[in-house]
Length: 356
Image (cartoon, helix red, strand yellow):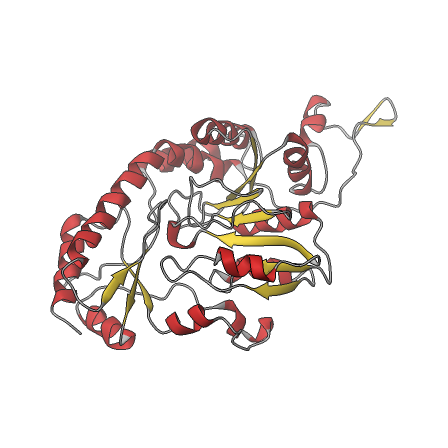
């Protein structure tokens, strides 16, 4: 019996294990010098000067929505085709979500549909780079939040939310990065991630809250607890050094799929002008038969995402989105990642060529 070719598997370089062990032998396992180093190396690698590391991609979204000032009753245009985290953070604020349709070529939010739904009540637009494919609503008169959890390396929009969750391009176990376009937002994001406290100011005062009977710091923003820790940052530092290797390898596997699918009827591979190859998403007829055939051949598949609007918490009703509705029973994801080899992709494609 073949070993199952898994859809996802974490990629943890050997050096990352050693780096975590080193951190665990130090005084700092919470937010400390490794977090600062990780932010610095991230900024340098991607040429993004204003960053704030956080505990998850979801935390990055929460802080971004906070910085924009979203509150109960505000309207935000978003996509239903995403991880629920994108929209749950809006729902928790009492925001009215206006669903936009998706593009058939990428499953990303449809720019034209967004423009038809913009009103003077719209406070923000959320775009998601699904599967690593760049979404592009363009420059709007309201802030654009980019959920880039699946697309590390794409930095478009006003607030970019990255993820280092277990199965992302690089992982810190769990973690995230909020990428901003100005120093003020960056500084406020760093306050919001740690109870509104300026940790740099505390450090300068040797972590003492009082000096000569005077407070050494004050709290100006009602922050939460969303900071990254040095254990995660140690993994992230190593992960960044493997980033280009990861992207290149995933691209090679993706292109092998693409070449094979040229000669197979009944299947369409989704791609875009800019792609970081986190998912291999296909559109197929008779999806259940297709998935059953692959499972019986020890090939893991999954839908990965279910449209958010059908969940009871979002209303439990399919929105009037013609493209989303027409593709709902056709999309499926195939294995890609550092855990599989080209022979695995060839095997998968051969099984698909045999029909379903």
